[in-house]
Length: 150
Length: 116
Image 1 (cartoon, each protein chain N blue to C red):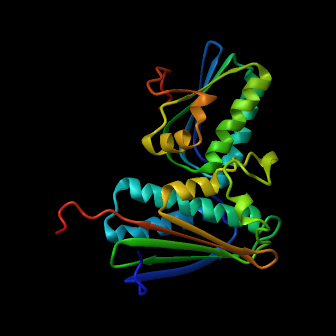
Image 2: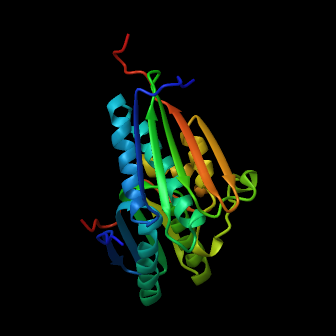
């Protein structure tokens, strides 16, 4: 679906402070805005990126502060892609982590719905993780065509 | 660490009903303080009914779901009736995705006296 070369790309890095969750999703929404997405698509992107960044903060860097990288790409076929990388603890069993309602942190009222939301609000989700090395969450979403486009 | 303004939170008490109006974003960052402020209010007032009005919540992710389900669990524990009112379409999609309505009553035209 996505062409090899993006038409635009943005990379940024920030500390895993929870106050940066809002920053990350705003950056993603602003970056996607150049493709004139619908309000619903913007809302989906914000939510999906917010989930991935929150995972990095809450799980990846559980008791520490580390660097989170956000890599955003746009392709000519209107595919938006976002990658969230951390160098935290990693996920032992990715399949288990992606199961709806699964959480390792119930006492902090984590709903266990993060990956489920990303899956529902994007077209593809890939999670690459190795314990002790970190996690990469890559999501792609094809934005709808503009109503007047030929 | 950066500081962020507290998310506005207003409450209206009508009889034994406590309505909490949340404004702005509910994410992992804001959920912590919203949770403790709602819980404090509930423990002090001990209402018969708790309503969370979400009409001014522009963004909510799974942390918001955790907040709502957690308040529901606490209300059940304390014997308090619990409702969610007026979610925006964005918030409603998250609530529906998690099948929240199987547990929690969601009112879309809640007539509580507005706090704004």
